[in-house]
Each structure stands twice: as C-alpha cells, then as structure tokens.
Image (cartoon, rainbow over all chains, first blue to last red; front, side, top):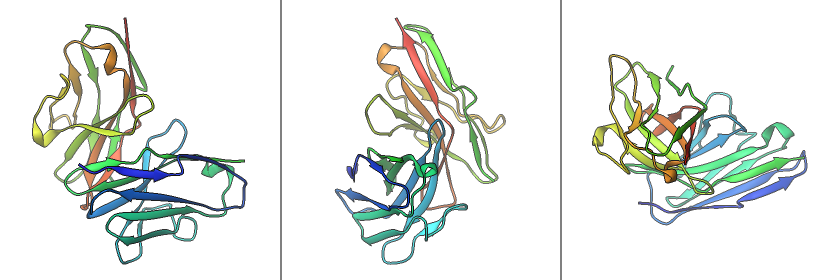
Length: 111
Length: 109
C-alpha cells in the first residue's frame, strides 16, 4: 500500500490569489492524479500528473488554471490559480500502481 | 462516454437489516469496477474490486454485465458501516477512475 500526505489540509483564500497543494507519497508510484470534489458532488478527475512531462488534463480543466508539477515518482503539486469562490472545493491527490490510494484532501474555501 | 450512476444519495437502514447500495455504469469497453468507502473524518479508501470477487467487512458486489450493475450488498448492517460509499469505474488506461456521486449509508440502532 501507499501512504499519501497532502498539505495543507484546509485553507481559506482571498479571490484572485493562488494556492499550491502538495502531495507526497511514501513510495515510488507510476501514476498520480488530482481530483476535485465540489460540495454535494462526486469526485472529478482534473488531471494525470506525469513524471518529467506536462500533465494530462481532462475536459474542462486547463493548465493555466491548474498548473501541476511532478518532479519525481513520489511528489506532485497542484496550484489553483487566480481563485474565485467557484473554486471552493475539496482537492484530492491519488496515486496508483495496481490500486488507487488517496490523500486526506485539501478543503479550500475562497472568499 | 463512461458514466457511473448511484441513484440514492442517502440510504438509512436499521442495524441487522440487509443493505444494498446500487451502482449502474455505462462504458463501451470491458469494465473494471470498484467500491470505495469514506468513513467520517477519514480518507477515501478501497473497499473492494470486482475482479477480486472477495468479501470485505461482510460486503460483496457482483458485476452484472447484462444489467450493467455493480451493486454493493451486506446481509446484516452494522453501526460501523455508516459511511459514504462511492462506486468507481476504471477507464482510459492508466488507472483513471470515474466516480459515482456517492451514497451516504446511515445505520440506525
């Protein structure tokens, strides 16, 4: 199994600012993903974080808004840029080799 | 496009009663399905996957390709089963998961 540490666990941010969320896995993993869970809704995949290359974004998500880094096989960051209240959500990091594991999530509130 | 449907947002049962959490999927390929659970104040974790055909914490789920369903069942609900349950479909290669909207299970005494 993999243990994922995600931080911050929560934050309250002013609109127009940016927040970077960090995700650390305790072992090397092939795949890392970022999900968003808006209030009352399901988890939606934002992007696949690719080690050594640009992330692969899902429909409706763009790099300018959600830049992602993955410098190695155990670490990734997601930045939520130029935030608005609509970005208030829980953001989840996930890693997968043969099974998907999740971080505890970052609860973001934009005011 | 792939889709996972969980029709019930909330399911309330009494302790000892049978539980069935419904999940239907839509996918043109060969489906690989999972149930994830999130207990209060804990992270999302895998409960079971259809290819394992195992029983975890008394829960089972059978893939029915004819009905495109993967319902989660338990014969006798326990209080500690109260949690949020998500059905998920593996798609697109690379372990990408498509999640249903989740069902909150509440087991009452």
